[in-house]
Structures are given as structure tokens and as C-alpha cells.
Length: 495
Image 1 (tube, rainbow, N blue to C red):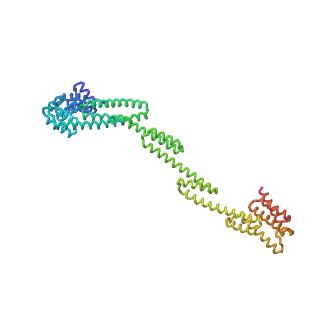
Image 2: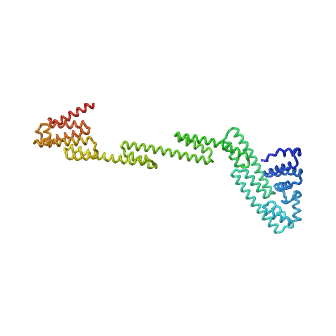
């Protein structure tokens, strides 16, 4: 884009001076010419420089800039030449014919200063003259190769810039390629095409960007400005719009992140993850959004893990309280798989071990009581007493064990008392019946003790049945009748 002409310069060109002084006007013209020359408009800069020379013919800067303009337009100008050299290519022809050695030295000097274009033009003119020497030809070939290398280098950079969409760099690289060989019409045309594409693209982007901003489509405007600032890094308005939209987008993005975090705090995990995914997709080039998404995932995973640990601790404690060793052990194993730690987990193994020991003692007690009941049913009072004593060690506070041991002790005392009176049938002694057979006597005693054991265990129906069977064998058994009467009263009270 051609830089806007300064208003004072514009007035001076139209009115030929006016109130603006000549030195000041010349200075303004030189400044504007420099801008035009830098932006790739040497012909327009030449117009301003002619005006500046008419105002002040003593300005050496004017001659220097005019030489640069003519060189950019493909014309030859010696670097140390004054205004007299700016007459055309015929001066170079005369110089080649009259001062070949001086021009050869000048070409070598320019080569040392990396002014390849002008050095190559002089060397080529020398190589085409009648007085051309091998040194002239060699220098011309060397400079031609240097020109080709420079042109190829900058052309390659221009094509790479084209590939990434940096049109500013494309135009700059083609200008550099052209400056290596200003007389090359193809390169001049390439520079012109690059400038045309650049100007057209800038105009189109500005128009599209203005429409997006007018319609308050910040998302589209941001995308356009983002691409434009890359393609035209030297065009300040694109960067300013991008910076402003960036601030707006950051504020909007932070507001969305706050809403996502609020959803996560409220337990809306899936909604929070979906919203975060949409936010990341809205600006895939922003690495901070991917980091925020990763942090949200980690946060939700930690929360789920804490919830799992809390639930497993609750299940384990409930199982321990209910005496369920298997379920509590499984919950503890799951906690260890999760890598849980803390005082709750430290206490659980000890509680499970305590429950396991208690369960083992209960199992041993139940087994001992079962053996004691079996001995009572078989009438083996000695074996029953031994098992009941073991049970008393396992559960000293068991009322059933204490009652059964007391019953066995009472029965034994009755047998001892009956023996002391000369009676052979202790049951008959309690019933007054002496004509029971030994087998009936043994069976009556067994049923009587079995009823007592059942009564102590709370199995009242079984106790009643046993004592009734005693009365069927020995109808006069006072102890059986007494037991039946007592259990009948207890059942009546329970009702």
C-alpha cells in the first residue's frame, strides 16, 4: 500500500510552495521519497526528488536518492557519481571506452561492498567491450554466478513465505531478488505481482474484518485478524485489532472457565467435561486451554477417587459391624488397589483381624456346645461336663453354659444323695417309683437332662417335649412335672 502523502507536501506540490519555506519543503519531500522508495515505488519517489532538486540544487541527499531510484528502475548509476552521472546508460558506454581500468577497479570495490547488482552491470559492460580482458570476463562470470545464487536464495524464501501465507515477506524477498539484478524484467514483473497481491489481500482483509466487527462477530473477526497479522506483520492496524480482540477473548474464556469450574464443584462432571471440550475446540491453537482441560480431568479423577475411597471405607466399616469378614476383606483389598491411605485405612485391618479372631472363638464355642449337647443326649454326663467347661473358658459370661453346668452339678448331687440312702435309682428317688428297668431309668435320665439343656438354650418347645417323654416312662417323676409347670408359667408371662 502506498503511504499516505503528508498534507504539507501535498499542498506544496499543488501550489508550488506557498507559505512553506524551501528548506522545510525539501526536507518533507525527501522524507516522503524515502518512504515511497522503501515501499517499492521508485518512480513516484523520483517525481518528488525532481521537485526537491528544483527547490535546492545543493542537496547531495537528493542525488543519492535519485541514484537509488534509477537503480531500482533498472538503470545504471555509479555509486560515487554526482548529478552529472544521472544522464543515462550512454555515460557507462563512454566510461567503458575511456576508463576501463578505473571501472574495473570500481567493480571490484563494489564487490567488496556487496553491491552485487551494480558491480555485475559494470563487469558485464567491460566484458562486452572491445578492450575486454580475461580478468574482465572472469569477474563478470563470477558476479553473474553471485547474482544467480542471490536470486535463487531470495526466490526460495519468497516461495516458503508464500506457503505459510506471509505475503509481506513474499513481497520483501522478491524485492531483494530483483535488487540483485535490477535489469531483469521478469524479476521486476514478479515484484509487481507480489505487490499487487499484497495490496489486494490487505484491502480484502480490511473489508472483511470491518464487516465482522460491524456485525459484532468477534470470533470471525479474531480469526481474520489472527491470519492477517501473520500475513501482513508490517500492517499495524491488523495487530491492533488482534490485540484488542485477544483481550476480549481472554476475558470471555476466563468467564467460561469459571462456569466450568462451578459445574465441577456442583458435581456436574459430565457437563463440565463437555463444556471444556467445546472451549478447547473453539481455539485449538491455545495451549493454555489444553492445560486447563488436563487439570480439570485430573481434578475430577481425584474427586472420584476420594468418593470411591469414602464409599469403600463405609462398606468395610459396615461389614465389620455386621460381622461379615468376607465383605470387609474384599472392601479392604479394593482400598489397597486404589492406593488409599490415612488413619481410617490404618484402623480397618486391625478391626478385621479382631472380627476374625472373634468369629474363630464363636465357631469354637458353637462346636464345643454342639459336642456338649450330643453328650447330654447320649446320657454321657461326664463328657458333657468336660465340653461345657471348655465352652465356659471360651465364653465365661454365657448363661446357658452356667445353667447347664449347674444342672449337671445338681443331678450329680442327687445321685450321690441317693447312693447314700441305699437307692439304686436316682430318678426313682425323685419320683418315688422303684420298679423301673435299668434301660428305662437311663432313658428317663437322658430325657430329663436333655430337656434342661434345651430350656437353658431357650428352646422351650423342645424342653417340654423331652419332659413329657420322661413322664411317659415314669408317670410319677416329680422333677419333670415341676419343670413343665415352670416352663408353662414362663410362656404364660411371655404371652
